[in-house]
Image 1 (cartoon, rainbow, N blue to C red):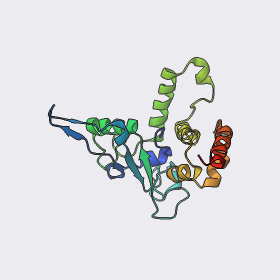
Image 2 (image 1 turned 90 degrees about the vertical axis):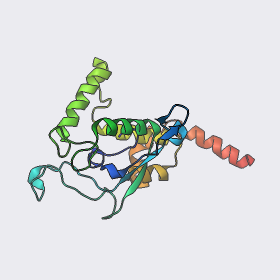
Image 3 (image 1 turned 45 degrees about the vertical axis):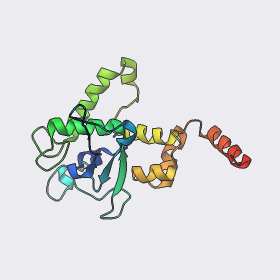
Image 4 (image 1 turned 135 degrees about the vertical axis):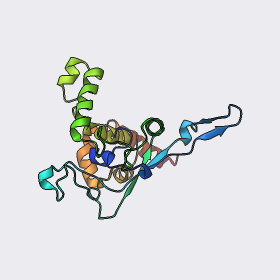
Length: 203
């Protein structure tokens, strides 16, 4: 979620064939497989659907989650999200160690089936206790797993990516993206002034 900006229900609903990773490289000298160089080790996630936690009383079949089309997308639409090399490495290691659940998901529940919301929330609470000070734990910092998505999109925008591109990868409309994240973009006014000056100089 941090590297790809996924919503929790999108990450949970990933299938192995949604994860497109670059092939590893065979080294004739060492007779071993190696990961490509970082600048070539970008993969893709093909996001086709999501399973938000609706509650069993609100679904047709009594399951906790309901499979839906992507948010802000028409039925059958999908989107492609780049996989940062750090996430590529994590996904390779995860799939090599754990494989997939019987239904093909990289992330499944302990007893099979979908990953329950309570499971990853408990893991997140434990991770915050391990990583943050007591004062930070009491603050809103990374309070919810969803905040990883916010951090990702903020990083992309602060990195100078065009809002249209960020919106496409995130599955937002540009207007929604800018309304939510306008205040998190630091220093963009100065960057914009420099770009205007360079454009007027013909650089």
